[in-house]
Image (cartoon, rainbow over the protein chains, first blue to last red):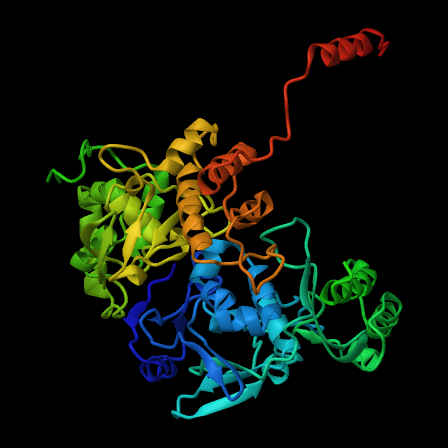
Length: 293
Length: 273
């Protein structure tokens, strides 16, 4: 690693001040991503601001929903009673990521940034948590260098890569994710996070689907579906959602919705399999969420 | 100039071509000699650094460079103080901020039980327990554990006896080469605490009701961050299950019976290819 100045921040504001004053300063959360890349000199920092001591770790009720602090560990978040009981989809998605050790180290804030796709770059984003958050309509609260708080809906958080694929989200330098806000829970009983990967554990998803249903008998009152591994940001499957509201929760309807969604897919030379895989994954995730399988 | 901390350091062994090349590269940093040496010590460069000290050529070069270049950035040569407990013992270290916990344990504290497998967070061999939670020491800066309690594999046994998990690993033949084993043990011990705390995993059927009894599949999922190239997985699972639920894991293999052997021998005898 290249040498860096090391600072231990004690408050969020202190951290923001330090990082925003140095163009090449970086935040250190869990280190599971940054340190890995710094070892290979893919990433570097002139100054590293360690957030280990910053007290931004609570998970509490908020506005009828829940507020998840950015520096809470992934494992603590996924296993928190509020999340497990009210947003099991998020728990499920987070527990499908990485390994137990990494989940114990990784922060929520560090799990949100992603990689881009355009003519310049075709990497898909790897975060399972982000997919579940997209399905749940989360809002990201960001501390700015000016001392204000910016609230960004998750759908707007990950930017389209366009001509700047290296800049993967709408955060300005020095801005620090402070908390993730979840709206009042509605999909507690019928949700599932399906993660399709080359092996059964500890791998990024080829395709993942976060599916949640609100049922009235066998009729779908409301549905949320987001996909990972298919685009540069968590993909909210609006076509499926539109197709399913008011319909019966049957495999046929799920399949029709999946068909509609994947129509717009633009596969490349080597990932055409994801179109068919995507359709089937959507159906399977919905069947799982519905409790049919 | 024999440093008692470094046994058997040979003061007069000449540097190899590689070491010379490396040395020239490092001297590009243009540090004042004292800072350079402090940085080498802080980065745990060990015997190599020691050999550098005895090379007259090196000392002359660092002095010359220091005089010719401007002041170095504040980063180089700076160290950070880390105070933490390891296996119950309080430790104070002064390290280059870049030093990871794994290297601090192995190189500074001579606790070589924890192993460096991939050094990139993918194998789990470096797993240790920090404040009761299992983490990867290769992706943790030593500076990050300031004020925390670290347990390594060396801290599992007491003076009198092995940790029950260690005994189980022996009883169930949970290792061959043993390289992944310290990481497996720390991971397994922490896993038991996670289960007691009611933590879920990806394969938990209902997130709302955490399991008290972990199935084999649950244990497999929860141990999936620890790789074993000797494939001792079934035995590792059996060892952990024996401690967790005091029952034997489902055995999926068995010795062939005499009848089965005879059948196979007959088949083999009749093959013409």
